[in-house]
Amino acid sequence: MKAHADTQQEKSSTAPDSTAIARLRAHPRFPEAAKYIAEALTEIYEGNRIMNTMLNERARGQIGYLILMMQWASSSQHAAQGVTMARMKAACTRMNYCSPNRVESIMAVMRLFGYIRLETDPYDHRVKVIVPTEKLIGNYVERWRRHFHAMTLIMPEGETGLAALKHEHFAGAFVREISREYSAGLRVANASREIDTFLDRNCGMMILLFLVSKGVPDETITGALRATVSISGLARRFGVSRPHVRKLLADAEAEGLVGDATGETPIRLLPRAIEGFEKFYASTFLTFAQAIRAAAQEMEDIQG
Image 1: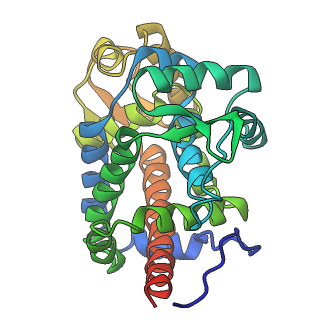
Image 2: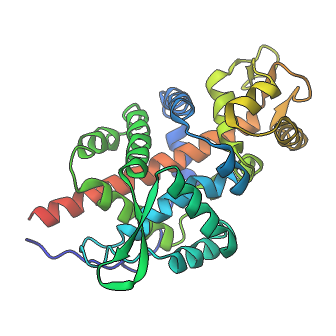
């Protein structure tokens, strides 16, 4: 068996650059892949009003990932222990997800909904550790499956990832690579500052995905989409208030991301928003492709 490093290696992030992102967006099937992921993630979205009020979209999408990263930071069983409340508070503060005071409340909600459980650390009985449940792991595996399926349309790593998901060790190896990239400074959203307004609001990204998934080409503005959906409908679907959705869309309209956002239907998604959405998922696909390659190599090394 080949030796495998169990600690996170120091390295520079291989974050996709603007040239790689532009090249992928130019792929003739990229619009199809982007539309698919918008529809797929909207379909499997699991929301609840409590979590929506506690976290913005950026943090909500990453806090579960953070638990998995810390759980699978090493391929050794001993080092996998120790995802403590103190470590979660420190990590959430460092990554600017939420305040330390909010972490315990978030963990309580995740425990209530069956995403985590607390166990006594077998190596230190004085300490309680946070353990991701099969529900949380399964949620992320299904999200990866949808991403990898979209990737099959535009890059070979998609097929590799789909096949690797059947392997019991792939999830840990994949998350370890994502964790290394994040530790080295990767932030997928850095490639798509245009849509920060959606990312920084509760359910903002899901609302953007829904508008993309339901959008049809606009007859008056080249590159724009029109989605027949109401503010009240969006509020009901994503468990947020109508004033929250109205304020989000008003701010997005002021930034040139949407149009006709003050009425109930339809809403126009402008080219700047679509550009940001496409850059976000091009960066995501490229990041996942790198992680798939690295995870496949790690599994090959372990199997010897």
